[in-house]
Length: 530
Image (cartoon, rainbow, N blue to C red; front, side, top):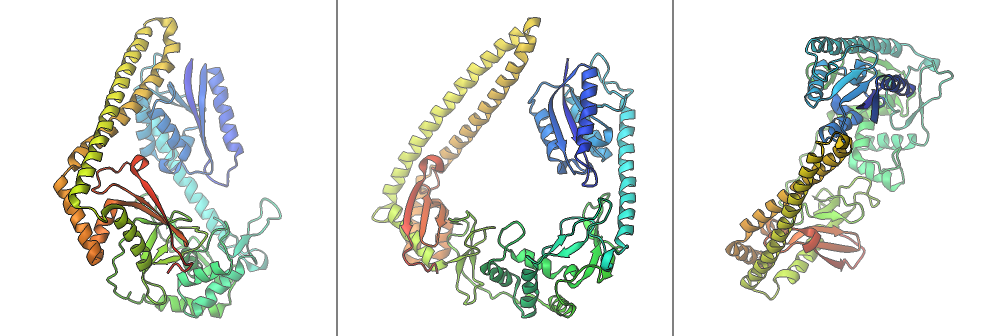
């Protein structure tokens, strides 16, 4: 009995899910006739075979093979084109499979790369290479034919003089109309649920408002994206730079160079038709805004010398996003602004001075008020010593478990000498090796942590840090406070009405936050966050 994985793929929305079912039917029929048992099935739907890194299930299959998840010796596919369309990549991956003792079998083709005795058939390998090259050549030809057909269709107007929508989802403000028959093309229609937001974007851009301001206004008015999330300045930018909103049909504006650069580039053969789609905004408004955006130059940002003490440490309590330092508000007042996507409070702000003074005062009271650097350093040294004792105990425990596991593994391997026990022992041996690998990883992690702790115990340096911290607090030296903040603080979560501080032990020695982190809750008092 041969154990194997099965893999199936179809490449685009022009094909159907039934293609997967048909491929798997052929694969399972082949397996039944050839005494092969399929233990897992992997399928990629509407995914190109040109590059492996875009196929999630294919990559998952390779990972399972690499980690010996199952004791298999073959991968079954329906046709070599379903496996890969890039000959260089296909040959490289198949070589890896063969090196692992796994044969790639195309069930609709008689060619096999392994002999009956399990040895690699060196005479068959050159023909398999040719199959991969032919598959890639066929992919290129199909791509050329598809592109030529799509471009020809893009030039043919339908009802009302509008041209067909041939690829991708409808732009924001539009929807794809229903087809009368499955052979008909799809056309864009104005989505009156989204179109008012689009018209406001163009009107406000004509008034000179920026992308972020427009997005904030729309969010305040209750407008949302198609998925129900907040409108971002990126969406506003995309809408204001898309010709479709003025009624211009564009197909193939860019093309993907799949051979050399593998990047998108401008396409000189793009189809561009004025009036080819229904316009959401008037042509005069579209032309006016487009001209303004083309000539607009970024105003140089006002140079500021603000130091954001909590940069990288301050997080939004509502969404978990970073609170980033920002001085671009109307009054140029320095604030921290939520940069999280989809935050229920939007891109809300909190005053820089207010939150920094509160947090630093709490840290001062917690660690430094009424103490001497020498006393704190001794306390840290004692805590670090206790931590290292715990680490050494943990390391010895892992070493003992590994030694016991290796003895058990050797016993299982010895049992393989009995032919009747081999099939029983194989999965047990694989499981035991997996357990030992996990223990080795945990052991190395503990050993690394112990070495880091041993290197970190420098009482003179700790005392120096504490003295600098005390001096910086007394003088409110913001650059020094910013540099020292991570020594005491691991994270600060802030809401409009409260703040939570998660702190580490001074000196950066004990950073295992699962055991050594404290929490301090503090009300922010009034409801005005700035």
